[in-house]
Length: 307
Ligand code: RRO
Image (tube, rainbow, N blue to C red; front, side):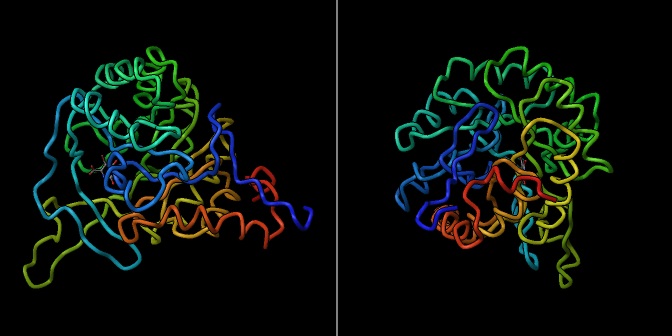
């Protein structure tokens, strides 16, 4: 790399050209409206919106969040305004404040519901891709169970691909014995990419009350605590499939991004980090080319899957 060359942070992800590989993960960025006054959202590689379902959902009883060493737990329970409201109000509002690629996350309780939601986005030209959430650990029906069964995972992928012309990323749960089996099933179903991972089923107890800290007994662990596990899983899937991976799990710094790309990811998402520091994505995007320069990396393609 020439001394004066600025490293290239852009990536090609299943046909989408991103100016950098950094996007906020679903559910940690709403529809961007809470962040739009904090920084220029167009600096983001892409925005991933909160999981939307057919019907509006209030979500789970409070409390829904518990702090942990090196991480946090949530059991939000798919709170969202429902597809009608989202398409009429929330997506147009996001488009008003953000010009870059939008990845819409959808979640259903049956194969048909996933297909129905995917079809609704066909008319929304400014949504670049779909992320299909077959991994929500915090609902009693459906949710993560779709992502724990390769037959169902493939069936949902196929059903979505049948009605959608957009790139489809299947978002996987780590709560399985062999995540490559699920990733391969999604690839066989026609997925354009894999988003991984969602959070780990976990539990915390208040020793004074002898009750769990979240109202739901079990909640999902995310944050730096899970980053090495996420990277191991991304690496396993990288060596098993041919489609690109969006690496997710505890990323906080530019070095964390580079580590995830070295594990095999094409792009990355930051989740919990946004809740701790709303400028987290912006800071990482700013630091990334400097850190690449220091490490002699001119292009992210150079280091992808080096291990
Ligand atoms: O809403 C949630 O409780 C939630 C979902 Br849908 C998900 O996919 N991942 C997560 O950590 N929380």
